[in-house]
Amino acid sequence: MSVYDPKSLHAEDFINDEEIRETLSYAEAHKNDLALQREILEKARPVKQARGYTCRGLTHREASVLLASESPEIHRQIFQIAEEIKLAFYGNRIVIFAPLYLSNYCVNGCTYCPYHLKNKHIPRKKLTQEEIKQEVIALQDMGHKRLAIESGEDPVNNPIEYILESIKTIYSVHHKNGDIRRVNVNIAATTVENFRKLKDAGIGTYILFQETYHKESYLKLHPTGPKHDYDYHTEAMDRAMEGGIDDVGLGVLFGLEMYKYEFAGLIMHAEHLEAVHGVGPHTISVPRLKRADDIDPGDFDNGISDDTFALITACIRLAVPYTGMIISTRESEQVRSRLLRLGISQVSGGSRTSVGGYAEKERPHDTEQFDVSDQRSLDEVVLWLMQNGHIPSFCTACYREGRTGDRFMSLCKSGQILNCCHPNALMTLSEYLEDYASPATKEAGYKMVSEELARIPSDKVREIARQHIEDIRNSNRRDFRF
Image 1 (tube, rainbow, N blue to C red):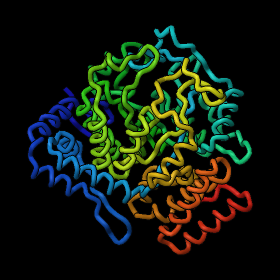
Image 2 (cartoon, one colour):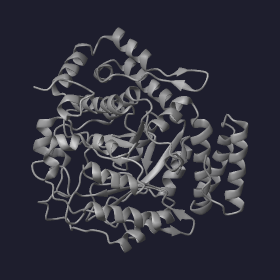
Image 3 (cartoon, rainbow, N blue to C red):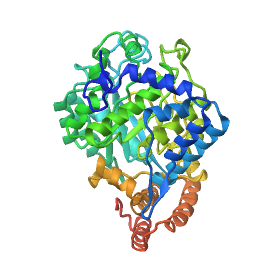
Image 4 (cartoon, rainbow, N blue to C red):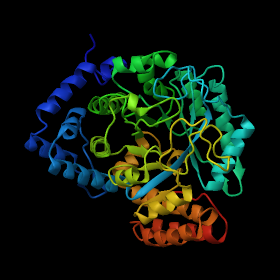
């Protein structure tokens, strides 16, 4: 029988079922213990220091107590502190990206994904390198600088060599003023050797969703294919870090299993990475199960309400204050608007979840992985963010300046975000405004840029950023960064 050990490299030790069940029992026993909950909230609150803020974060057990709370007043405080933490470490910036689906060939039998091997309804498609170029040009014409590439698991159709060649192709495309400056990768668990190849190819973050941490459910949901191996999948982040990838992104697919179990497992995984590698996940994603071809969310009985979803997001922000959080176009404009204030720091915009979707004028649906709830254009998303007080950021500077892993976390914890990420966000937003924005978005954007420049603490940095923005507007120069 395994014993809970966050420093172990064995999945059943650091995601220990007995520990999760004891945690849930403890949380249930204290769901009305307001004194304990207030004590945990005080621990979670950001503390102002001479240089920025500091945050202690929460253990998986402490965070689970807050998630189990039945007090509306405690919920209100959770939301308030989550917003305080978000503003303390990430400010009002929201990083924008788009997914790029390379292939929907897959040998796995995942019961919640339309790409599963037995689905004969969905057309199978794999992009050629020329088709990838056309997709990238379409994305650049929208204004995107950061992509997350997606692919089914198929060693014949989608081998690592295909992924590496595709990354090289993406980085090679320079169209007008467009460049993809960061490629994140969301592909199946692989070997240390292959992770080294991905690192050498210049990827940003390696992303892999656990789907569910409940092993018994995991095995049923993945009945066939290499993804059936729970341990190999769950230990992928350790192999990625051994392969030199500093930034990794976690996530579960909420709706597959009991959300409190998943929440505890997710925070335990973050604790494990911190304990073993000295740095937690770069990002945590919070996708919910959505309708897709051959997939009906009603077949799964663990769906969560919007209110519960908001509480989960806020509790993650309290538990892992320095980690970026991502929400995709799976969610509606209304849900995304609410969660942006509770900890989300990255959103997708203008997304298409089909293979080859961007080069088509009309949104194709036949090869979509899931229904897209937020179908607005990137320009509409950019304007919406600004109208709600958020700075749309296309920044990729930290990755290209080597500020990854613990170096990024040090930047975040030191309070230098306002002197680094803030001006980078304003400069990349200015690039978007000049090259891609509609007149209304451009007008609103430069008003925001002017106002937000004044919030840069350093006089020197502020003046350099102001000059760079003038150069972007008047001299067609691009890609300034701190």
